Image (cartoon, rainbow, N blue to C red; front, side, top):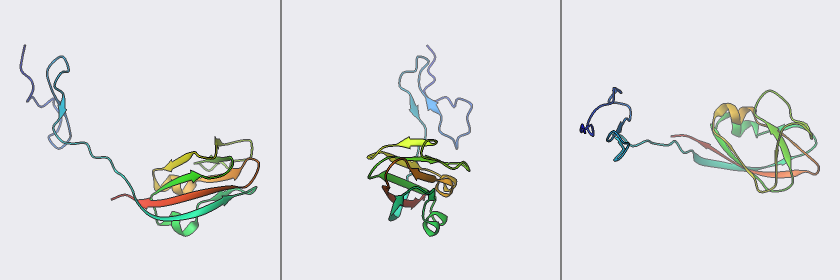
Length: 128
């Protein structure tokens, strides 16, 4: 068996690359993989009613991530230019959490209630 534990697998040294033996044993990464986690900086309640609503204008323009906790009742939402209706959109239930990971998703989020008004608790954040 050839010892390849220290072989650079053809990747640039600035990128993580696996090292290990031919059978996949003893596999490690040269550099740790870092996950981006937003710093949650603001929060605000949002009532979703019979008219389509987006996130708070001032907060959505200054934050690149959001975490929405559905507190009461069902809503439907889209993350595109399509407007949701009570029967068309991604359905969520009370207790669900929606994670918006980019500024575009925060900007484009639109929601509407399904039957009764729903309350969302929204946390806004930025990366880095």
